[in-house]
Image (tube, rainbow, N blue to C red):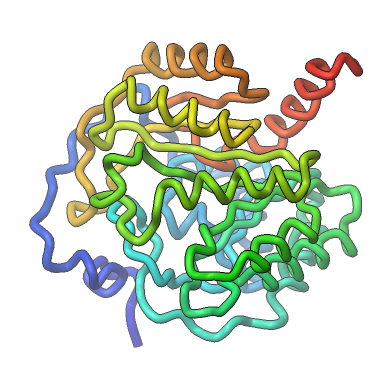
Length: 316
């Protein structure tokens, strides 16, 4: 049995790489250790329902804050990914078969936690013909059945090796927000996201809007991987050409010495400049801070996103 707590077994594809130094984090990056009662309650509910979260698997720095408020991003289809992106701390390898009872357990946890807004993500499942699209759809339907007033945000893989019907299946399940992250600028894809294709991911987001123009779309990137500011602004333009509504930008943090190096820590002032530029390009919602992650403050941000669309349409 693999021990996923050991980096060498968690990331066998990275074991041969030379170590990259992990620079000291600046003051604006540091967070408190999770110790609150709310954190423990959320952890216990998730464990009882045998659920995996990206909060833990990806080593999110905001886990203490989010779990203390009863918020968690649930990761379906297992904890082992078929991809080996150089930035990601999720384990790589051959996944297990899908658990047909998982959508029900997720729905039960959402109901138990009393969530107003939930984020559902997954590992990449290139081993499945539909990339796990039907499993996403079943999970959305199960949550709708148990918690009809809960808004649902999904953060999906790219369905790169699937037929177009896979994406259509997910959109037909009617999540409130469809999120797929571009992760970085196109020039860095070979080293950062080698199993993916930038323009395929961009087209995926555009296709969601074609299938359902009313659905909110969202995407994010990390900075500090070696990109330049003009490249980031070009990604913003590309996203707007695909009619993406919501942009997130956060600082890349290196999980282990075997992962992609942190090339620099982007300052809070630079993040504010990115936020200003993004709003100027027409995004309805922007979250650009060092600690921003895809699902950080997702519920509050969704409420603002919906309000901003109504304002733009002159309906509020």
